[in-house]
Amino acid sequence: MSYTAHFRVWRGDDKSGELRDFDVEVNEGEVVLDIIHRLQATQASDLAVRWNCKAGKCGSCSAEVNGRPRLMCMTRMSVFDESETITVAPMRAFPVVRDLVTDVSFNYTKAREIPSFAPPAGVAPGEYRMMQEDVGRSQEFRKCIECFLCQNTCHVVRDHEENKPVFAGPRFLMRIAELDMHPLDAAEERGLDRKRSAQEEHGLGYCNITKCCTEVCPEHIKITDNALIPLKERAADRKYDPLVWLGNKIRRREG
Image (cartoon, rainbow, N blue to C red; front, side, top):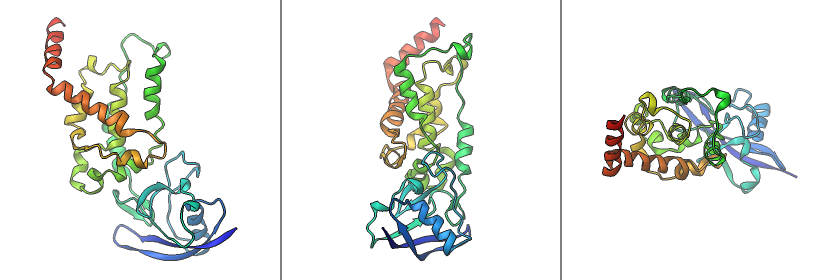
């Protein structure tokens, strides 16, 4: 069963652009990305859109559908009323390249700033052993497909361009949290305090845990509850708790 839907799609580049109206055929079971492809095929052959797997696993087709950051390939047309106007626009937090394609290089810059896993001394990669509970805790965060919807919806990045140099954003603070709770990460033995680094170098204090990043995550990762809040608590303990401070002093003297 098919019907005609009214779409408003953003067309333009880094200099100017506007929302343009299109009437496009919709068939049963289709997603927004299907309609964008049909629009390319029938009315706007030069429409730029980034996509790859069409299975919700590559993170390429991120956009804002009716103002909400979503993967177009995972947004079914059945969630909208047939009479509803559907607006599709590029992610607002990042510079537009053309049409629905944005420049997300900010995120790769931040990824390179995060120190990688520090393997324990004297243990070969094939000899790593962890409790299953610790594996499961880290595995949740490794489901991330790097669609950058969490980065896009975070108002610290989205609404304040001046914060970008000093704020890693939820995706990469989550990466720090994962490494900090990893039982085999030997960063501290090598002089790297991940909690201090998160606070002082990657802007953890800018996050005010509104959970908007969690709400838009297509992999349903509990970014705020399971990564950011625990990391904030550990960072606060390390910096302000007098008992933790004293314990660290004693351990350093014994060392």
